[in-house]
Length: 250
Image (cartoon, rainbow, N blue to C red):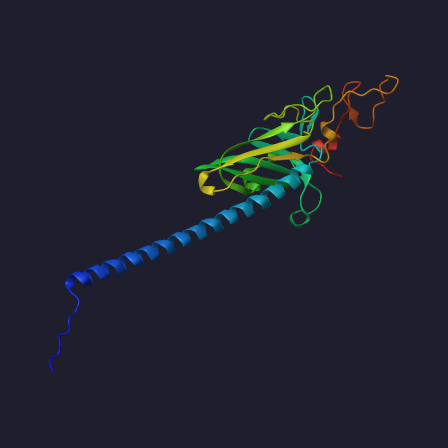
């Protein structure tokens, strides 16, 4: 009985099989790596969105509760500073959340600070009672970073005109003795953040400091001034007690 010789694989067949196996493993590894990268990118985007949402809620709460209380005073003119607004900086007085405060109003700042590779939105706060802007030192206030990876941005403000109409947006609040009616924050994040920062338009709840509008009674007569009221006849402009301008709250 004759047996047929067992025929094995040739070298070419083994090389081809090895090459196909390598291609399959490479494709599988590439797919797994792409999936892991996509998952990490998605998790990073979700984390960034959550941090921005928390920062926006905090900013909206603080600005909307701005109070017309003086944190500084111009001795030459006797004007109390209740709101300072620039393109990249704003300072105002508002209460802090209960879990972050010791009670009473706080002087708060928001600043677009230049850092390596872009900008950061920084927040600082200090109690109004005893606050002295002239003796304020940087080491006394440790800023809190709210938003990072910012490519550019600006703060804008809106108030009433002398005619009592809502004015245009401006990036420089000219009258620090009044609070604006609305504040807008516009930020452009870097491409690597993979998210967009929606524009924030924040109305102030306590905006009596921004009211300066003509008023006449039914018979055309001017009303008598209210306690603490300042300004020209026919204009409502509620002043701030001078004791607040010195940083003393009683």
